[in-house]
Amino acid sequence: SGDDDLFVQKVANKRNTTAAIGANSVTVSKPKSNFYDWYTQKQRHLTTGFHYKFFTKFLLFLEPVSKFVFYVALFSSLLFMSDIVLPLFLFSFRLLLLYVLIISFTKKHDEKSNLIFIPIFDFFIPLLNLFIAVSSLLVKNRKWK
Image (cartoon, rainbow, N blue to C red):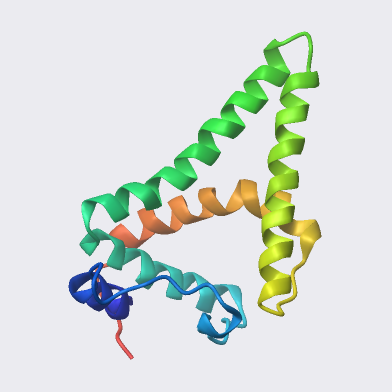
């Protein structure tokens, strides 16, 4: 469920670790073929997060929280502001930045991407991850392969 992550966290330091961003530095794993298998795998992965160092947990927590704050602010400003130009501009800018980053990554690593789904995933994946995290707390028996 993430023992590799925990091992790297335990032994990695500035002297024996570096960041590699080249095309040959990516490890590819076969994705799950259905939602149930993906959901079960995601539950297992999220349970490992409790063992991460505080700063790593903080960074992993910051990303979905920043999305939540962004979307709450966006929807609030669209509802309560008379001028919607600024909120729409900020949303468009953020979406453009996401597209640039994802297109850049997929080209660099010779991957394919369904660009039409980016706005949908950007909004719903944090909600789905929160649901999975809460549901994983309720699961008592974990099966190891």
